[in-house]
Length: 185
Image 1 (tube, rainbow, N blue to C red):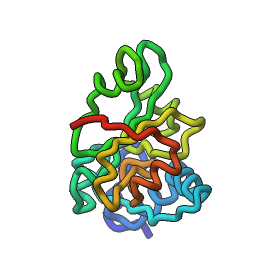
Image 2: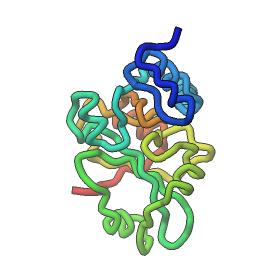
Image 3: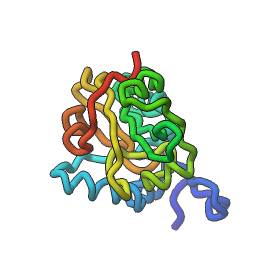
Image 4: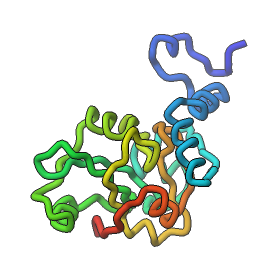
């Protein structure tokens, strides 16, 4: 028997209804989510990964889906350093935008470039909207927004645009080896 709400066109590459048990299980068992779960376990963490019925591609969407303040959302953004293709991961609070001029000055580079989808996937192994702070193919230079420390619990992407997990500023510092910095106001 097919799950309630199943649409045949889903087999043609369109999405299944997210409210179905089938879709929740499919996201929870997605290889990228499993990779995040395994990376967290290597650090002694086993948070419950929450599957949202709506996308968490933006901090605003994630906050609405979780019923939390937008500042509690830890967005994982990839930039490039100056004119080089070297990726930089910034873990920032959803309450503000990254001030790229400020971060570039603090890092001693001319500017930060916005990474395109190919650079994001190559550097992190994740699609935009599901980039996790952990489980990348290789270590990434990482900055963490000090504003995340204002919250007891923050929520980060778990490898899929519908998957998030609770963590803390301290845990993120520990497991990513990030450099703490003010990245916006």
